[in-house]
Image (cartoon, rainbow over all chains, first blue to last red; front, top):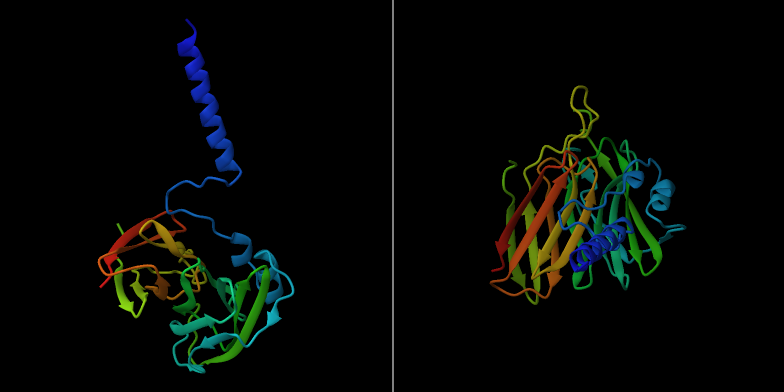
Length: 155
Length: 98
């Protein structure tokens, strides 16, 4: 007699669980819209960026290699290749210290994907460029200076 | 509707090398009268598995280029790439591994 009502209640309960799981971040909507770490992309210093990404006390490592021109003639398009030989590399981030915001891009490297990224970023002026790697639960970095003869920000 | 991506996925030994060129202004927001407009999220999948995910800021160059390599793909498999920008616009394209 009340089976219809009971079923409706059960369904509603099920939906509630799904909504709770989504709220808790257990389930993610299937759209391409994913998380974007606004806090990290708003930082200006290396220390603040690392902190906003959930890390602390990054250790300099020569297992991380940044390949780029030493002098970029056009700051609007500076090619970078970053690779890591650190075991269990989970993410690679590229930071341009003197840009308005330091963090340029962050890449999540799933198992089976080579810790190797090739991309192009803008540099407003000559700057130290930092590659930050998360490996295991630790953070490591490598840095190099890239000279820019024509800036890429502000136009 | 944003222009399609150019995607090339080729076998390099036992790995798949993916090269992507996206069509996007990647406006920094630093120029007067030009609010920030840039791709924030990128995701690449192959056979239902995420092979790369990225979060980008406006410092990524206009018409972004990205290359990466992964294991577990074979010729004929499809690599699907999606991006979403800060206006909520998105684009999904795919390429067959050769």
